[in-house]
Length: 334
Ligand SMILES: NC(=O)C1=CN([C@@H]2O[C@H](COP(=O)(O)OP(=O)(O)OC[C@H]3O[C@@H](n4cnc5c(N)ncnc54)[C@H](O)[C@@H]3O)[C@@H](O)[C@H]2O)C=CC1
Ligand SMILES: O=C(CO)COP(=O)(O)O
View 1 (cartoon, rainbow, N blue to C red):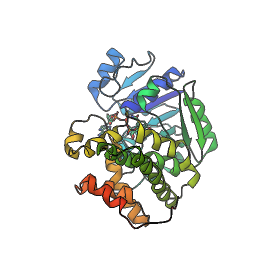
View 2: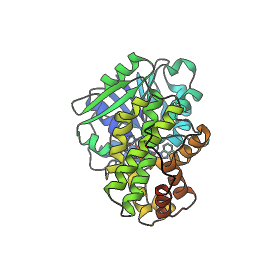
View 3: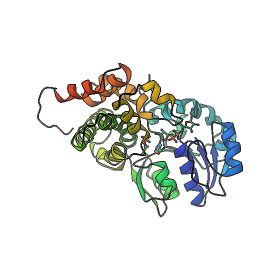
View 4: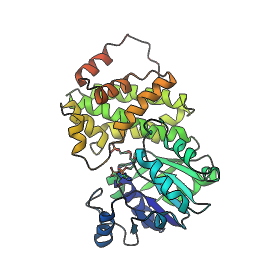
């Protein structure tokens, strides 16, 4: 297949490399023109995925018409807050039957939309059946190193899900199918908020008990928001829900968990973010998730405390104390 990948961060670069190794003809678009020049010269993404030499057949561009035009599949891997702008610019160049695969994990600020709703708003109706959403426990560096990985693709159209599944799957990358788009993409977006909280807890020096509690109760909050948005409860028990939540709350490769760790150790958010080239999607998604939960009248105490730490400067220790001293309840798992 001829495939374009929009976004040469660590995940877009890794997926482009994988697809090229799978035998497809792949063009990777980077936002940074200089990076394109260096990737052409060195076959390395020194900004976002150093240490890996990219497949020799992979092509690079900074021109959207080149990555979008004449492609059977285009993979969207820009950060979620800029996805709308990037897709709007690329859309006019897409062929009528191009399949779009979104791999971003976030909820847009202001509109509070997951990526499927953003796409529904900006794409012409005929494109919507040709979309799929890829999510799951997938640290880019591990996939680039060909470590066994499993994840989920969701689409309304079973044929599209099957096609994406076979296009991406290989001996180290196993893709499962789902028809629950909102569940799959919200799992990936909301787990980042809980990963920030798990990082805060570890940064404060709390132990494994606290982390296990955050993961378990965090999953309940994710499920509640998801169900209020029309997702299936069962989806949150899968790779794109619990799978990605466990990975990101416990894995030291997580950027979101790292930001939380630094917050727990007492650093200020602006300070932490100013030293990062990469995106920690959970920061902006916390604001969206907090507002979305309020709008849907869903109880999400961990997300609320994470919002207060990030956006109202609340002391992390006070946030944990407030979580612990809420009124005592029966254990409700949804
Ligand atoms: N890195 C990972 O392990 C995984 C990341 N993801 C998701 O993939 C999406 C992309 O993240 P990463 O590849 O990790 O990015 P990254 O953090 O490695 O790099 C940042 C990316 O943002 C792009 N960017 C910054 N400003 C931009 C703008 N104004 N317009 C267009 N692009 C801009 C940069 O060019 C670069 O591609 C995110 O939603 C992330 O949650 C999903 C699974 C795994
Ligand atoms: O989504 C991811 C793994 O599935 C990557 O997590 P971070 O964005 O926290 O690094």
